[in-house]
Length: 147
Image (cartoon, rainbow, N blue to C red):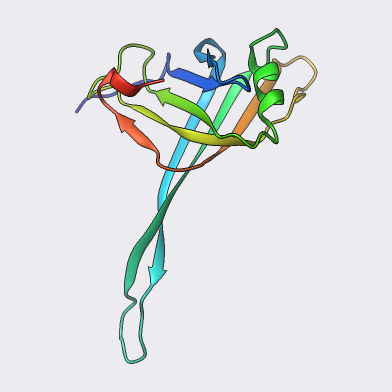
């Protein structure tokens, strides 16, 4: 069994102009949720539930250390809120090349929300990107179409 301690993940997002911005050095935590709707097919007379999978869906939650400089966490997120154009996002466990043991999860998304100011006195400022997928979440093990 191969254990992995997350210490240096890769994170990139397209900004409002469509340019890739890598913010790996700002990431505090990342969570990718991938699921399928499960529909109930239970009929009268059945003694157990019957189910069938439907559409897939995905979201990401990325917590970053806040940075108000150009092309950093605040400027990127502020420009994406309310944008009607889906942008690319990509995450992988380690900030090295894509491989079978270091897959990249990427897709098109909308930034649903973020908090430009979220801090407590004496603590580092953070920002959370709440992302909703728009289309397929890909799991890449070859860098050919990675962002």
